[in-house]
Image (cartoon, rainbow, N blue to C red; front, side, top):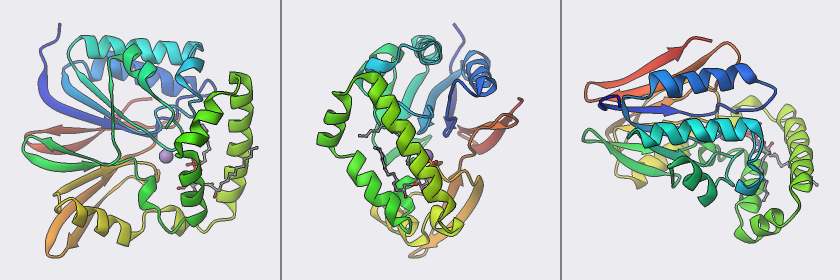
Length: 248
Ligand code: LP5
Ligand code: MN
């Protein structure tokens, strides 16, 4: 067993899907090689391109990824998973199969003594009012129960239709409203006592931003999404944060 180091790793927005096997391959290699000595791995949403229920996780991709996460957690790395806007139906079956723990969005973590706020990022996009209305609807427990009671094939069809609507809606939206709203960032930092760091994904606009709210400085690290040519993780050690690119 590899000796664990004081390293917490963060990824988000891998959007694992059968159509993009290269990304899955890179992630499996990362779990096997890059992450084994980390004390914690945080997946901050949209690990999967979509998730229609734990009971539907019988396809090869899901099984392979779950088995790799299970191996990593069995070797001592704490695996923490946050819902994204694509995979918010990950639930107890996924936790049990992977040895992971689902964490709330937002979560205030202590990383080597530094309060660090973790989010997926979609709740910060408050100017995208159509999306926020859609989100309220699909995060409603009764709506989710009704969806999960449908046969798996019908669920996949519904998701396909919703994706098509969403892609059309995104084409019609100004790019600016699909980024975080500054007021939402400031408000969440204020609510959590001005943590010096906020880490999130979702917007697919990797960058490190500096905010000063009520005289308190916070860094906001936006994680990159993974594509066929690029993937990255963020590494936190007692020395600080570093963005680590992964080869294709
Ligand atoms: O995901 P991304 O980055 O492409 O776009 C998001 C927002 N879109 C979404 C929708 C998801 O992609 C759809 C897939 C969800 C899978 C969930 C599975 C389980 C469903 C369970 C139901 C209980 O999140 C997009 C944002 C963008 O991020 C940037 O932040 O703009 O928001 C939208 O596009 C939403 C639209 O504005 C409004 C909603 C259109 C959908 C209408 C539904 C029609 C359904 C027809 C089915 C019969
Ligand atoms: Mn997302």
